[in-house]
Length: 520
Image (cartoon, rainbow, N blue to C red; front, side, top):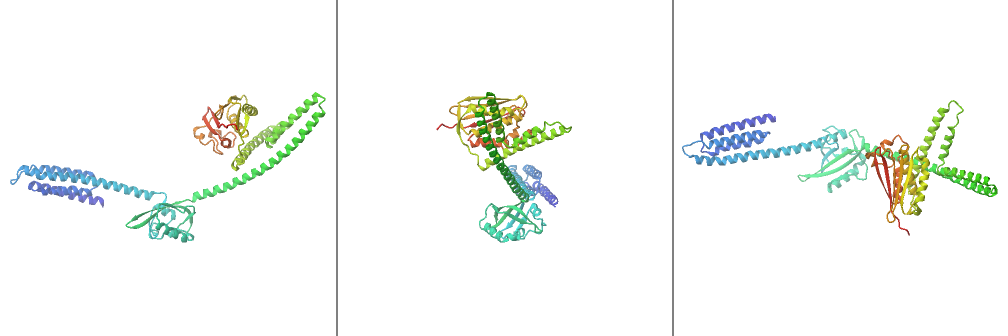
């Protein structure tokens, strides 16, 4: 239809131009005839392509110029030129005007197409209602959301899409919005539900906007189906409850372990007292005294292991089982025994991490700063870590600065043991692990642990201190993903800051900066 009308307009413009050209030639003294050319140019405003406007503008320009050279008996040449000069200017202005109007129209048409595309292809449901709550317009996403046909909703009340049990409150909220309109999120702090055609309810999130047209209020509702989000929230709540049950089980286990530790401590105390009495009685013989001292040392060593964790007893028992080789099935037993040892060790680390994290979350761990000798403290930590090092690994300690420092020695020891354990675990055999500590007189203390291990990728570094996070290149190495998270929490408890520098395949350096504390 549009092409057919364009053809008629083009034909009419051509006829007008030809007729005007003939009349110009026959009556050059009448410049009013030039208005036919102007009219032809103006009519091209109804033709979509600019080419026709340029074409008829150019033809009109040439015809007016040609008409200025026609001779007439009643007028001289100068009068004819003056008459047609004004027509020439009008043709030029008309051509530019038509081109400008066409450009404006195309811009408006483009904006309208964009708005229509935005409305039609929006993934959110969009509903337009009037000030009476009647549905005026819906986009395809809204029809799909509520499962109505296209001719069923326009003209209906918006209450049709609201579950019956919410009608009373919805009318009140809607009237309140009409009296005080504004862009807002509807139902903030409340769960909103909508109703499909078959009566099924589903949770939604609604945002409202409005505008006025001819003194009439129109409301735009943007509707999103949040069923999947609600299901995710319910699943999250369920998992939180499961985690609470696990935490409670861990607490009960911890209570049992503490009772056993207390019992074994009492046994140890009694044994030590008995050893002391025996030592006084056997003081006559040097050999017996050495033997008693050796027995006492073994008891203290055993008690130390028992004090740290009762689960280490299970590991020792499993290690002893692997020495029995009297049956031909010994190889299989060795394999299963190794698995038991690895599993128990992993469970032990997991339990310790969970207990530490649980105490941190409950606020049971507090910093208790006190003055201590730094060099002796570092030697103690390094000496404790050396038995855990791999074959030919070296733990090198470099200390510079004051002899003493004020901080929580217990938390600082846990931090260093965790960092050194990671360095040992993620470094190859024969690698050097450097512990560098500086303790200036006026500034705080700085501790850094540097290894030659597998390193951490740039992508993983930003998440490394998060709980339960493990680097992509460390998934095959045992660990809970809680170690560095707990270290960071300990560092924060004593008012410090932790920094990480790492290159994939070239090692990692972790630095802990502690604030200085003035002596009282």
